[in-house]
Length: 314
Ligand code: NCD
Image 1 (cartoon, rainbow, N blue to C red):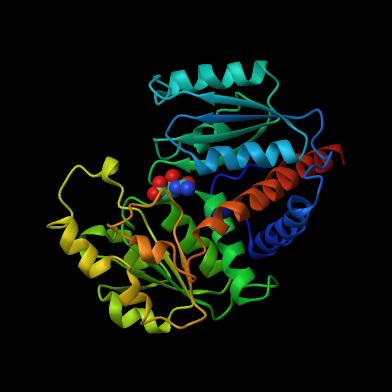
Image 2 (cartoon, rainbow, N blue to C red):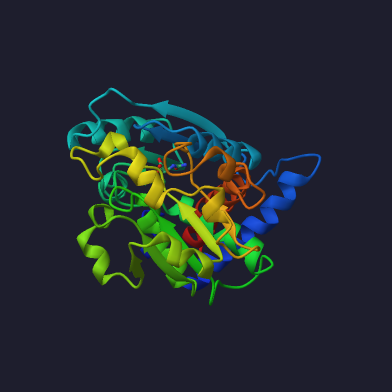
């Protein structure tokens, strides 16, 4: 059984296959009838133990466009962060006949635990586990960058990408570093030293504390949300100082290459890491990222559910 728990689960060729498949899926979404019969009779469970808007509705739309049955299970407030409870939940999902479980969970490693536990026979897809990984977000970001900067084809060699802000708490940053570098992009992390995890020194990236000097060289700029809900300490003196040093606004956008794109996984803290004008500027592709997310998740569900069934029948 194939699971998507981390970007480390996929090699470069398979990542490109996912992007190419998403490209085809986008054509379906643009058509008059937005539906394919591919996953008819399959059940996809969305197990969301943490708040989410985009990712949850995106996986739901993707599963429905492939004709799967969708069960939404929001477990916020329950005690599924305890191993035993996750097992109980998993056994319930197994009894419902889940062919895939899309899991978002506040605990890093929860998706791995669900897959390793062998309590369910279906595919496990990590939709964000704690501060660890969020592979489908990285794939939709790579898809968006490739579409704008590489004509929707091939890899991302030579593309310069900045990932800016709360790297420390960001599963989006971790998955993006793994995927974008795998695809040949050059990644620069920009943040105050307090928001760079110590292990980032060993990642294949450049680290900068000076946003203005980085901006003129970038093709894509990914702004990250300041994750206040995961912050137990003070990581910067004030929001005002953070915005003035690491936020993007129209003045900073003026330092960028004209063809460069501005991205954010959402939800945005307008006025903190991104000004309202920058978020709504012509360089911003934030809304398009959401649409691309549906195509990517259609590709993931298709390749991991229909694809793994084919291989297990061999
Ligand atoms: C991200 C997440 O949940 O990790 N958002 C998302 O999936 N659209 C980023 C964030 O919450 O800041």
